[in-house]
Image (cartoon, helix red, strand yellow):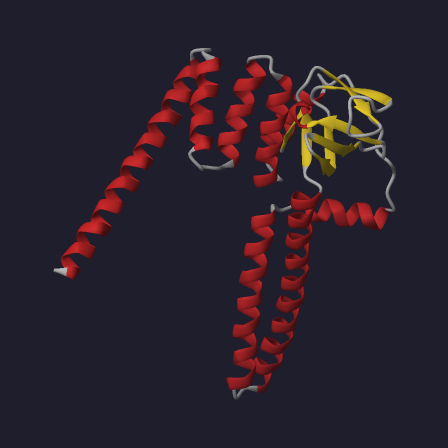
Amino acid sequence: MATLRIIFFIAFVGILNSAHALGMQALLDSASTYYSTNQFEKAIASYEQVIASGYEASELYYNLGNAYFKSNKIALAIVNYERAKKLAPNDEDIDFNLNMANTFIVDKIEVIPEFFLNSWRSNFGKTLSTNQWSLLSISLFVSALVLLLVYFLSGKAVLRKISFWMGILFLIISLVSFTNARKQKWLITHEPEAIIITPSVVVKSAPSETGTELFLIHEGLKVKTTEKSGDWHQIRLSNGNKGWIKKTDFVII
């Protein structure tokens, strides 16, 4: 009897998952139909509903970004292109549309020059997403263990030599991949990037309406959030300028 209940439970869960998948596919199909017939607001609603259900993919964010762009909501288009880029850093279509959307941004902030090694390391770390670096690290670590196992068990000198040095190489690359994944995860957790969504925002010197007005920024600009105080967040621009704005003025990528 207990076994029968387990079988029925597994079957019930499978039915629910199948129904959920069919529901998500129906929403995606309707979103594509709305987009192709220029009903962009309805397409946005369908895509947002899929995302709210917990589904995440670069193609989904890319299509949502396109729908926002067609609706002339440039800041939200940039948000979703940036989210798509985090999942697929090397996608040329995402890069092209993101660059196009960025041409509509009012603020042109100069980036502080970095030491070339730091710049190279940062760009190298962005060639893969956090999950991709993690998977690469795990795969290479397992491969290194297998190769080292061959080294200890093999009776052939040539095979032992090759497996040993290949194992060491894979282990080193695995550690590099792990470091990149950890660095990206830290940045996402402690200094998440955000896009300004309010048409214009006065940045304050303190987390208060009475703070001194420092400078003005506009929607679409990408910033980093560094500290939090109530409903206020400290942001840092690419030129190093800092200040405080309200939580309602931006969306985390």
